[in-house]
Image (cartoon, rainbow, N blue to C red):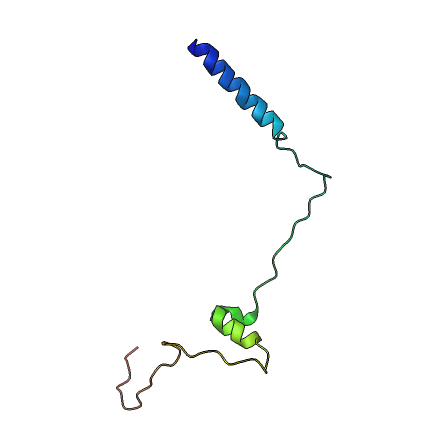
Length: 81
């Protein structure tokens, strides 16, 4: 009985895989490969900078958030390199 159930399971799996198409190229046989465009030169400075750089001159300015402006103390001691 156990063998019959396992044979039935194997047969149903085989029928299911056969119904899926067999893994061929599918369709017309021509394959189109789409390559993404290269990143812009300003993308290396971050996504927010890149978006602000590409923004229209008449668009609303970006909101200032914490971390955008760094306070500079002219009287501080320089850090050794």
